[in-house]
Image (cartoon, rainbow, N blue to C red; front, side, top):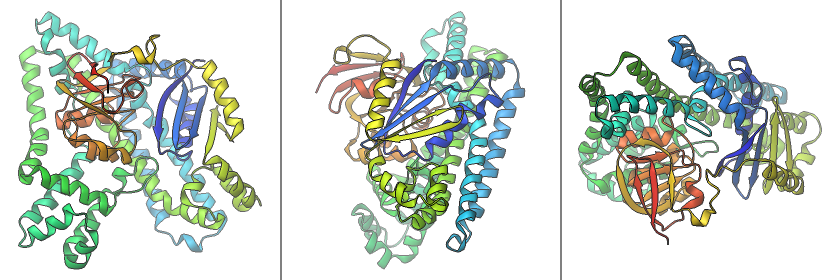
Length: 518
């Protein structure tokens, strides 16, 4: 077993991560040759660090890739089950959230929570396929497709077009939920521009004056509320909150700052209108083989559903907050605190007479906790016990650094090309939504992995660079939709670069170089 640090991210809790880790260390064996033998997660000072048995992950990835490349049977099964299980999960969550939870017994609430974890685990079995193919250590599908396409293009004498054509051919032809929200928001913005009170409303938006909007422009404020309700889960990520009016006003203010609202909306819509034709022209121009055409179609569909199924997870998290909030209320703790307990602990606290014990334990757990999962069994620790466990894990694990060179001496890193191009700018490390305000127009956004809650910053950035992910990652999807250079899967970008560094992003060759240290 080869434990490797694969991710660090701020603002995360034990829930809902642990449900996914139970699924990958036990349930995934129902469709894979093995399960992941061990997962170890540490959360200290609001920073989550994750270690995975990457030997098993790589073995599963190669198995999935081989099955998908052989024929469409396994691929179709994955797609069908993701949609089916997601529909089942969300239907259950919606029904549960609509119940009068305050009148339910403790046992009824716990039953909902237990059933939710079971349904989420079932979805996670199939939902793990796209991210594992996308790569936890190496982007297996991306590497396979890029290698084959590169060899094909050499035979055509077009090796200089590999990155450009690859970015287009592997893109989804369907708009992501992120782009759906942006189109809806720009439609809302256009209605403001066309209104007789546009100047006053826009000024309130730019001032983030929610009170004035609610008081003076009630019908417009109702539209804002409707928008946040429709797209609330988009910015939830793993720990919330859902999209707020304040967030929406900041996004609208940015829209108005850019100007030409109708043009902004048309640009997004044109991308999806034109991408199919752009692919057709490339396929005809290079006479792309039928098997490569199929592999590009598979890649594009997996890219879309990887992002879609993340949206399904987030919708379920948001809906389940209704249940967790009521459970937390009965335990006299906060919503955040209950997310530092796993199901069995919640059950023991509520019906096993251990409420006082866990309430006291949480004070320490919120500062520093860790958990390990093996064969679906989770063990949670906190405080000094974690320090001992973490030290042992660090000694046994393999560094995520792809080089033996000291961090301070590295001037250049490599990753996978998500969208070809070139950009030069100032680095801004963005790990949480709180970091988005420091990003200015033309900066280079560097993150462990992007999520929809970082979209305000991504719109301003000239290019994206991430530690994790491959062709199907959120950063890859957004870079193609925005047509911005993007290099993913560098493993160490957030550890090498610092805010203020001047870098160049050569996304044609998947290289990011430091031009000047801050």
